[in-house]
Length: 383
Image 1 (tube, one colour):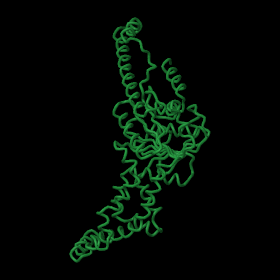
Image 2 (tube, rainbow, N blue to C red):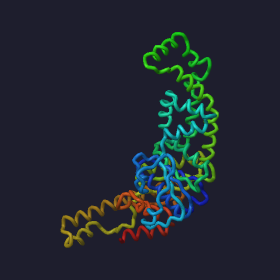
Image 3 (cartoon, rainbow, N blue to C red):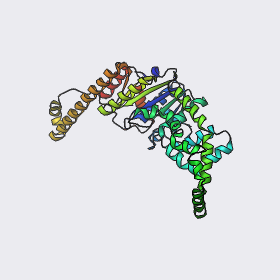
Image 4 (cartoon, helix red, strand yellow):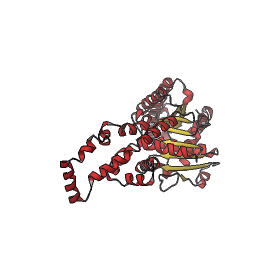
């Protein structure tokens, strides 16, 4: 799989997969590669460790895209013909922005955002990174300022957590608990009963907090936004299945992440979501010398000394075990997908990817043909 061919004429690339497989790195490398070809690209991450910011030479990323300095790419040998922008998702701020967009006027918006009940509930709801990630992606897509958006999704063991994200908030808002408050004859009405009203009055005198008023304002304002949330969920669902959107899964060659990638692929297929392929990261490739480890130790004995030579042989033996494991797991993945052409293999690099130069190395593998990728692996092995 060549990522450039896979993303041709696409406007949204969603990188999904489990945690700890290099998904943030893959998303950044994909965005860099497409920007190098002349596109205006934004990569959106939820990575709290700020690895993306560090790798792009930025001290920090905010909730709005920032342009990455083109000079960084030139120093890493990447000819940047387009623009690469990056941002790190702020879930709470993103949820506030959704309220601002859906509120019918500035007064309603300010009433909700300043409401104590909203602040508590929004912190809980905004904790659903899947929803806020899709919300930000949708807003950036609607704004139309970029040729391609690349989303680094939150790690999740349940693929449905992400695919169902647009509907979950609406279901929460339409749930029985909130509906009891929203109905005039429900709990909201009973709250103003004589006994309860007196309790709230005492609470107000002691704490200065008018909880009853906060509840009243919150539920009254919220009821006017339900239709907006429903419509937004429908539009986000449409974006996920749009022909301009594509899903790329990222995994490592260990069996558990491979099985999770297969599960995610099945869910995408069942939901009729556009699937592009799988990036298998940190592969111990077969281009390593296949010599007998004991023979290698004997060959190096005179030059290194017996003890160090034996350690080299043991290291080669361990590597060959890992390479065989990776080969078998990748074959298992290709068999399940029934199409090995949907795979892009990135080798286990000798250094952690922490800068633009590291991203450029990953990019070379992602944007290579199968034949070119094999030559790159062989060249690294010889080196």
